[in-house]
Image 1 (cartoon, one colour):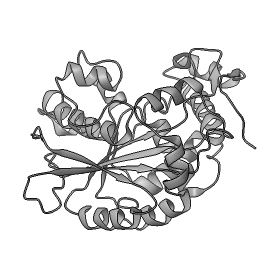
Image 2 (image 1 turned 90 degrees about the vertical axis):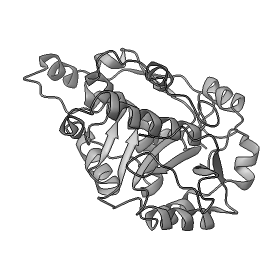
Image 3 (image 1 turned 120 degrees about the horizontal axis):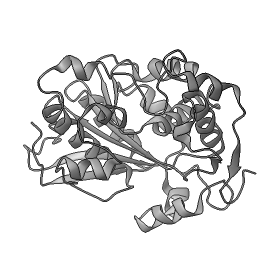
Image 4 (image 1 turned 30 degrees about the horizontal axis):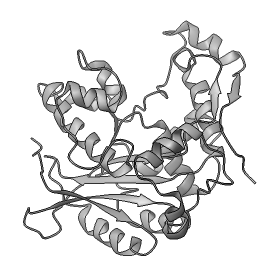
Length: 301
């Protein structure tokens, strides 16, 4: 059972300290192989004219690809824990516990496509875009360090996420330096290549927990999970909240049968594989065109 840690600190990672912070993470992964993660990005600029829930998984992926290929990652939050939800204390003997928030410099508010409402929301939560441009981590530096950190290519690491198609897509594009694969099946193969088989998306899993519904904050409230540090739409804080929810869901929804939870491993919400013989409407949706509108501000130069 996860303790309600009262002294959690977000380690803010910038260009000046990223090497040291990844050296810490590298030393902790074996003891703390559960990794919850979240991202912040400039919103959504391409929107479907059709309700996304009425689209097939393939079309939702096509829409995701259009957005991610056109936009730029802003933050990544990482929370490491052991199987019982204990966080690293970095030698403080339990006096403090730590999570990480990586801040990137590559997004330029003046030049790059973005959703103005999403940018304002991030600014309201304390994101300083001028500081990001000056002191943030370059994608190439992050890529080099995370690839050798032990959190990727590691079958012993369990990834904990919530509605994570965009999170994985942005990190994948940052890791490869190229646009996302054309086909959803190839995206899922690349995802498994980097992150391994042990991936849980709780937005998918709540469909199998009686009574649970909604977004991250709503599910936390229903499970009576309180945010320990920071505020919503901060990548570090949200990653910790995901870990808290995951540990609580294990107790509430899956305690009687661990194999029920394992059945949902590797399934990403919005990108569930569909069988047209089970969902006849899916076949027709795949055949028709995907109609989108641009709902952002600024453009790539």
